[in-house]
Length: 49
Image (cartoon, rainbow, N blue to C red):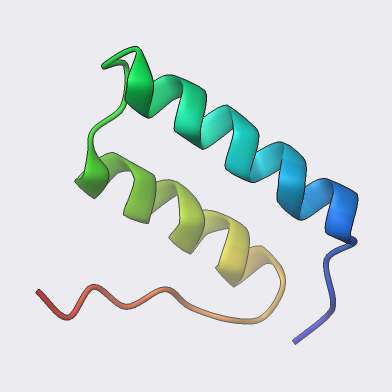
């Protein structure tokens, strides 16, 4: 998997947490967003719940 730069990871984390805290994004939606990002870089996010 290609490496994301740490500042990019921090920016993604910050935006997702903001959206969650303002109730604009739910946990399931966050997993879908992370899956899209992971697939772009050759990985996958798996929800085992």
